[in-house]
Image (cartoon, rainbow, N blue to C red; front, side, top):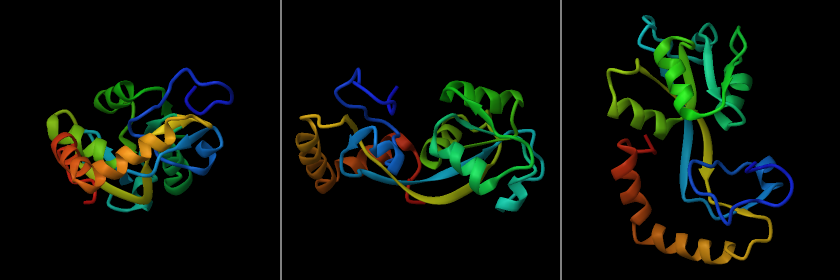
Amino acid sequence: RLFSAGAKPFDLAIGEISITGSRKRAVDFSRSYMAVDQGVLAAQTVRVVPRTIAGLKRLKLCALAKSTGAEVAQQIIAPSRPVLLVGNVPTLMLDLQTGRCEAVVYDAPALGTLKARAPLRYGTFVGVVKTGEQYGIAIPRGGALLAPVNKALVSLLADGTVDRLARKWLTVDPSD
């Protein structure tokens, strides 16, 4: 619903939302507030952890449906088996824990944080696929909140608030 055509049932949406060309056709975006890449987290059952894209091709991969992680998994990694697309993050991570997939492709800061908070629940953080994505706040097309949101973001970025919040809640440095 976030990126579907037509009226939106929200005033703004904030979260792990990557700004993409196709998404810009459905909503307006604030200025970027964080740069991120996609990460790959393996299941505990993966004994030989691949360290290259070619090595990832042999694994059963899962990704969040309609996400940039799904695009990376399908188009850049292009595994030998179809990528399992999952509807929400809790199910994605449960599928990793239960062996439905051998690795997940998702936003690197989120995966790093999940791994750091529950290190025995997941396997190795395999690495990062450099995508240079930018997070932004989604606002319905032509919404009156775009200018005030951008003004607030400029202030929060300038005074270091966004960096402090990222260090506190993401557990890992998203630039690493």
